[in-house]
Length: 223
Image 1 (tube, rainbow, N blue to C red):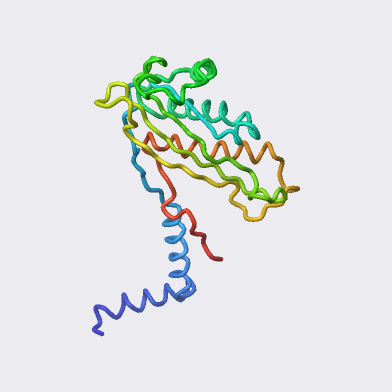
Image 2: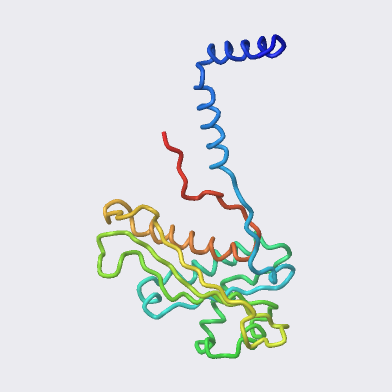
């Protein structure tokens, strides 16, 4: 070590000694880890065809779901329609109550050609949410909250080359709550159902617009 490098090196070592030696590097490492854990990444829309189009949202559900949870269809329809209206540029969304009323007036609508569905609703696009599962408990166990919602999402384009076929299809499945083995006494049924519908409809809506998600959704800092 020559004289020109010795003095700065000694001063640096003295400063590190005052600050607690290597401890400062541990603090810096924790800060860096915290910043990294908080980072977001952009997820692009899977389907952009709703932009600047007229859109209707239709929701169908299995008979058992309709019987046990009669409010699920209107709640899902309303939330998905509101999400598209809010987040998709230029989308003109038919009032979900009009879509629901049309479905009630047309009990055989699920058997109609897809293009006819869009034509009767008078829109360019139809987002069809077909719920095949909606439950708040594990099968056979009413003492635990373990919600699950699953559906197939089909997109009808009235002006496509084949309007009677879905141009895109997606599957969505979510669980709520995230806490395992949550006892029935720990939460009200209305709260669990509301939370499950909210998480499910948010997941459906995110198919149609760019959004941010946690880069490390499951990572937690250790103490």
